[in-house]
Length: 462
Image (cartoon, rainbow, N blue to C red):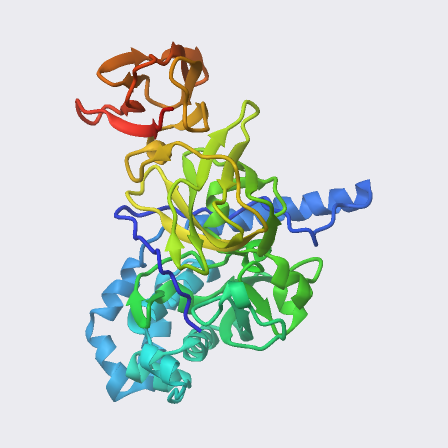
């Protein structure tokens, strides 16, 4: 089954993706060590795991292996149609010769699969797939998930790397989180490889690209190359509990309660303090609290499911004094809303979709947030600390406070400019009384890229 990214936006620069070393978000099913001996054993395992993760980190730059790119463009590639057995043998020979260890061999196999096989959207939507045998897949260059995992295993077998095909349920294009079926059924396939006695997950189907509407779009990634099993469980559930690769197994009913999150959600989130569910019940207002990683940004948008309508200014992001980040929601009516998450670091021009959940509100929220702006606004240039509610009252005094890496921050009331003053730790503040005849008020920043100021937020006045 193909993943579906309706909001997918590609980064223009190569992103070094981080394989999560500690367990950043602890699902409710995870337990803590019961005694010091167990804690010591876990620490020893963690130390060993750190070195393995470091090796994977070095291979997870979001870029295809150059040797595999050259192989794809060489005469060898023509053998896929004329002599597929010889092609597979020559590919394995080239990988074995070029790679320094099994981690690198697995990365090269992953990359070749993503380079040479395109997701067969026609077969998926028609429900009539041709043979997914590895040789047929290499020959045609098209496959659904079964063919991707079959081809991956075939190359692993050629290189004596222990590999198995894993089947299970995945929250992809055919999954509707608002009406997720409660009865388990398998709809996807991926791989588990064993390197130096440890198992690793690879979903090459989802790393080949994504589905936009009903059309498969090729967009290489390494998001699903050796993801942390603790993060993988938010989107994939296996036929066999052992294939979860978790110390404490998750039941399907527990899985259905988890939000649908992708590994890059945890690139932005160092610690998730709110116990998120797939369906979160609330009464007009909801808050997510987490610790955001340095140079990372997590944002979201929200859709009224019944009306199929995106509504702006339902969310507001705020940094607290203790370093916790809050995303606050104020919902305009009693309804169900789909929240979509996006991850971005400071090298990326656009953000990547990284998951979703539902807010089921029984009433309307009373809070109205100031208007924020995409791309060059608040998410890119700072965090508003106060005031976070609108409208503001004319004639009343407020403390305007922003945390930003830029120092030139101004409050503009009509044609009058008020410069915020440094208060330490990247925070800039000023107490301002709003004139009784004020018509407009906004906070802007000069981020050094030009003489212009970018608007962070604007307020309605009353």
